[in-house]
Image (cartoon, rainbow, N blue to C red; front, side, top):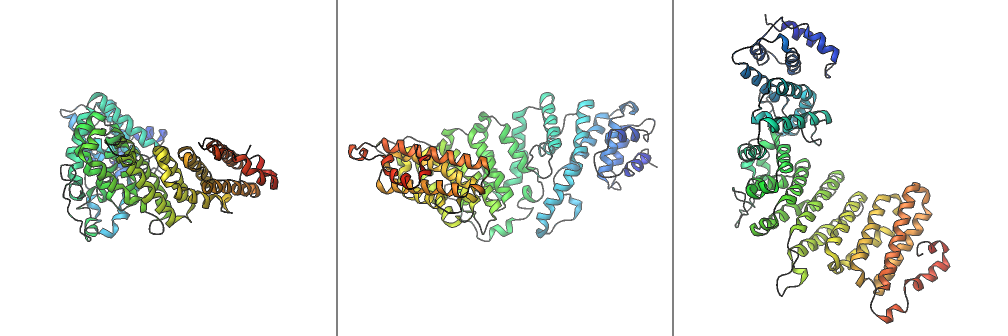
Length: 532
């Protein structure tokens, strides 16, 4: 009979699957032998007959919390390291080889099962690691650290706020006493991530992470055969990989990225190339963080700007009905954010003899509007949440373009007008507010061309119709929503008034905006507040 039989019986008698209470820990310690060595405990829990990992983790914690009963042993460090290895292995969000889940059509189910399993027992496993680190000063192996790092992101279904806090404490402890951060980064990039992603690297880059000058054409049937854990172990077997990569990017210094950037590129592009939303979404988030640290000169000299641009742009067309609206809203926001970060890093000064609109930055911003916003709006204008995302990012694009945005007024004005003059505009207040704010950005940056009669009349019309609509449908809005939108419309009208006063022609100045709206106010006095 095992020295720990009574302890396991008592653990299995505990009610529920939650973390044991303080009283439970005290009562469980009574079932320990008078004294024991950690080697016996490690042999007990790695026994194939022990199937209940939760019970094993509780047993390890009880023993670690009862250090007074632990007898010294010659190779005590080996025993405690075995216990740490066990704890990290069983809570790791990876497929268990012995689970026998091999069928490709069960891969998505595997992800959910693995996430649920890890979420349930992670608090116990991380507590084991914390206790071992504090009481035995254990230096974790790289694999243990990878598992700990995999609990640092709250967007993962296996991570909670408590486990995230525990993981961050453990990482800080290891870095303070045992590990060098830059060395750890390089070990993870070279020894862990590079092999995991080697078989699924996109053709746009070479194996060394540089732009491929003559990329191979993609096999149209390749996508189906690639969706296996043999080709994509990072997606279907070792679910730690994406979170670990995101952690490396978030904690890496610009100096490290400037020296080791070829190790980052294949992983980034693989994530951006994936068709599953959860993967592509994380890729866009990581790309945005990476670009903020990536030196501008390397981005320019290596030609990677066009590689990133080509990798992200397809996401702008992930629209309903092919892509669910919820996923489309998520991806669009992240894609435009990443492209804006990329645009800000590109050359904004024209070459000698070239016009300003020919710069890499200007070309990318133009493309974001023409091939992104306007195309998506045309195909998905009935999806108000998508329209809101488009307008929010259009305003940011216009701020980057400045006066060069005037070339797009012929598309911008009708788009704003269609939304603001819609009789049901008040039913979507957040979308309406985003549209008004975008119109303000349009006026602010394109005002020199807005004084043409056609544009000016259309702008007055959309402001008047929208203002009357929200007043007619005031009961459809919360009080604070009405006040906010009304204030935004009044501010927009004021901006338009200032824009028309700034035009250069004295002939145009003979009739300013107030004279044009006077007949409208005479007919509807409510408009006096709009054009104050």
